[in-house]
Amino acid sequence: MREQAFAQVQLVNLAYLVSSVLFILCLRGLSSPEQGRRGVFLGELGMLIAVIATLMKTEIVSYEWIIAGLLLGSLIGTAISLRIPMTKMPERIAFSHAFGGLATALVGVTEYHKLRDLSGAAAVVEHGMSRLTMGALGFEVFLGSLTFTGSIMAFGKLQGVITGAPVTWKGQNLMNIGLFFGTLGLLGYQVAFPETAPAWMFFAMVGSGLSLGVMAVLPIGGADMPVVISLLNSYAGLAACATGFALKSNILIISGALDGSSGFILSMMMSKAMNRSFSNIVFGAFGTADGTAAPTAGGPAKGYNEATVEDAAAVLVASQSVIVVPGYGMAVSQAQHAVRDLAAALEKRGTEVKYAIHPVAGRMPGHMNVLLAEANVPYDALFDLDMINDDFARTDAVLVVGANDVVNPGAKTDTSSPIYGMPVFNVELARSVIVLKRSMNTGFSGVDNELFFLANTMMVLGDAKKTILSLCTEVKGGGGH
Image (cartoon, rainbow, N blue to C red):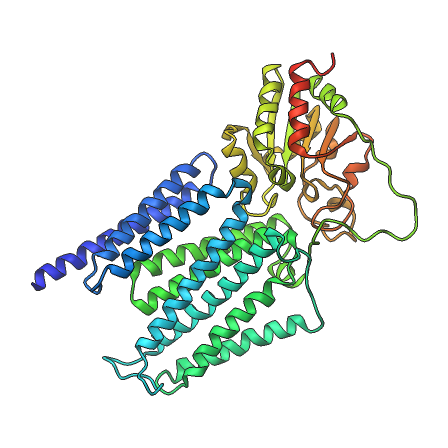
């Protein structure tokens, strides 16, 4: 019997090892668009193996609730995935992070109750509540609670349920910092005295995590949502890692550490792409709700060249090289398929078409890559900032589809601009620039875009998808020539 149990434990550990390797290969695959689909498949396979191996553990005495949860979760997840378009993927991810954090926090609360007796004092079960277990449970419920409410706030801002503008008040940062270090103090006391610390301290950490998740995201504007989502993903991973230590689960420790570290690294990369520090993102109150800047006092309004679809089509038809710069406006209008059709029509006429992908375009890391991949845009046509920025000076026409701050030349010259220093595309160096926007409103930064008022820029205002479909018709017809 013992040999059978030992063999089962070894089999589970082997399965966990295979899952861990697959998770690592998954992250490696997700580092490039070409291998992204393969990376997702490997991650799914690793998760399936890990779940099956966990269900084989001898600690499980009843499968009724597990099966019920599996069926209910599968039904809800399938329904959500079928109904939500790719353009709403940022909101979908934030929503998923929220319930992942909640599940982690609830597991921590349950495990804490298992190690307490009815009187509220620490239980003397087996070896009691160790300092390591108490520390793991504390981090687990705090980060899980913070991830839950923080992700709900991010979802609300992205969905428009909550204002996307920074919500600030006097002493806000001091309040958040005080709450954070106060929670660490509570945790430190419980780690030092795990068997005598009162239970209210533990649940106070849960409450502070829930509160801090709300107050930490409220002052963050829409422009920083990609970094926020990535950072919350890191918190969720660290919470899962802490759960692994509390439950003595190797797979949770490994997968949580991978998730937490990769999310943190991605957040660092996003911050670098915006040329901003973490502290500036968390405490900077950067970004506006509706992209409308406060009017500048004095001086006449700037003039811009408003063009028709026919004018823009004539420029595209006459161009030998075109670079498409997609932004969040493409996602809002769901124009990715129309963009691909327009590119195909241009390529049929012998025009070279490339896509310039900025790392912070959209509302989640890789947002534009995901949308263009859905429209079957070839991976070898996608170029990041460093790879394509020198090409704009040699390009006949640039088509900006709903992008704003990432093509603002002011980021390179205007030291008073909130986006000064952020790496942007050298769009203004192209022979002609065609900008598709709903209106002349500013981007998330709330500042005017100098590109829109240059002599070589034509503004085609209106819904991007409708405009591109009309452009496609004109290009196929010769663009008026």
